[in-house]
Image (cartoon, rainbow, N blue to C red; front, side, top):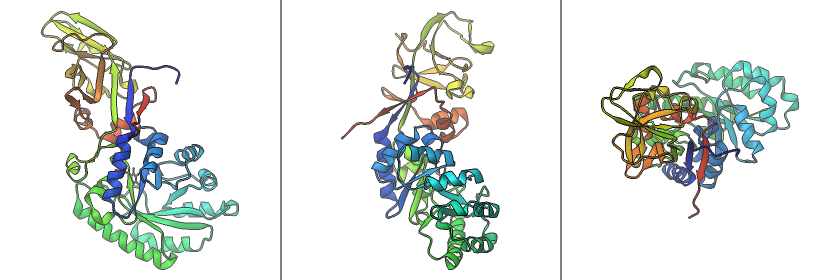
Length: 374
Ligand SMILES: *Cc1c(COP(=O)(O)O)cnc(C)c1O
């Protein structure tokens, strides 16, 4: 690390370990895939992968071939599945690095033919079925022909078959229809190809909310980091947020009634006020929509965001918080004293979901790790 900036995302790896164990316990005999795409939802893919494996994860899920290769280079021997698509150019890298890939396109199988002579062993694929997400996947009506294509090719090993839920927490009826359709698709596929070792459908929300979705592998992303799609799922499975996002006050000033703060002069003070400046802005991933519309914690109390979030700095109103000085800790998400700004609260202010907040936290915000050995 070149320097230490006060603006950091502090990740409690013990919480990640705890969450993995909670999901493992909840999923009976199924194996657990730790989904660590997008740099572990912004938490650091390598650190999260290491902690997840230590606590029982036996698969790693990523979005792209490059993310998978980076994990192999870091030394992980665990099975890795690329959940999204890969290009023909990436086929070789996946084969050489022993990375499983999702397959759903006939064209892609044709492209594999071109590489078949250099595979050292069959390429492991997981057949993606589109049961209602309508993003990627073979449609059930096309499956018969698709599977017959696969069956002809000796250099392909169909190691898994899977599908994905668009609304596992909010629409059980639709999700159960998807499960029924998936079961039919598995039957059809196994009639042609024989038994497929891994069948998987559950993301975090399904793992908690749809017992019938577990099969022998669950793919847990958001839940690993301590958040649910819907807060009420927390009553079904208790998990712990791993992230605290924080910084320190860089400057304070007193301004008189009638002054306005920040770009566009949008925050009018209607009394003599104190303002603190903090070194975080939208270039750190602190969303600009939070302008005049969110709070931070200082000395265990809430301070309103005063005016527009700038690219690198933000001002907050500390008039009601005595004795704030330069260097005082500021919490953007997390606990301080008896107060908390939860991820869910920030999502309401920013009109978005935890995943979006997490992956928006930029690289220039150093990740620091807490890891207590107990
Ligand atoms: C991202 C992803 C997951 C993990 O979803 P969460 O809701 O974060 O648990 C599972 N499966 C697929 C195909 C995904 O793309």
